Image 1 (cartoon, rainbow, N blue to C red):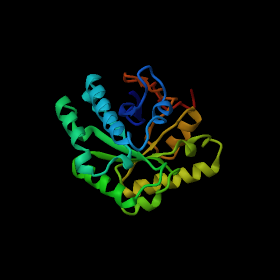
Image 2: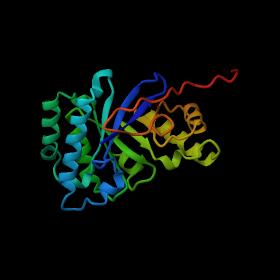
Image 3: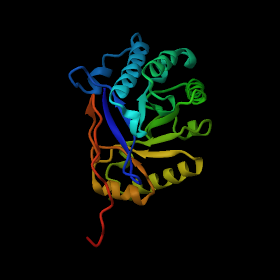
Image 4: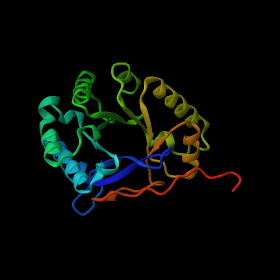
Length: 235
């Protein structure tokens, strides 16, 4: 696993670290995920959860209040309460706080809405936080929000890229952020790579950001993000 921080711009502190799958020698996620098929999906999903929690504990991630964000595969979960047992056992064994774990899923594959809603509602009753990743690029989108409001929505990086000079992207993100505020959902912008993008996101009221501008993923370590204090105009 590698970990990439999600930063709270208001406090300058790390809100959470996202666990990103890597090979034993640091190979990228694509290399690893390409080897996962229907027969190995469940075991792979379970092992990713275990590894993420164990490493987060070893790195003392929760000591300063940071959360652990774990990606999960909805199609690898056949029954939420049965499939979460090993995760619960690992958290209890390591002492990692359940309320510091976020489960995020991406909409990049067609999902059965009833199935994903069952997972999200079950996880919430157990005390976990939930997040939709890559919002704006998936299949469910707004339709899913009418049935369930997750704790967090992560904006797809394609919405962020070039937002400083693209009025269409700026308008879309502005309306999404306002809508999430009305629904009581925390918005995270991922894929932030330039100070121009960050500046626009600040102006739009985005408080939590993730991307190479702040810190790249650190292999089996916690990256320290660089300071992103606003630049004074009279400096």
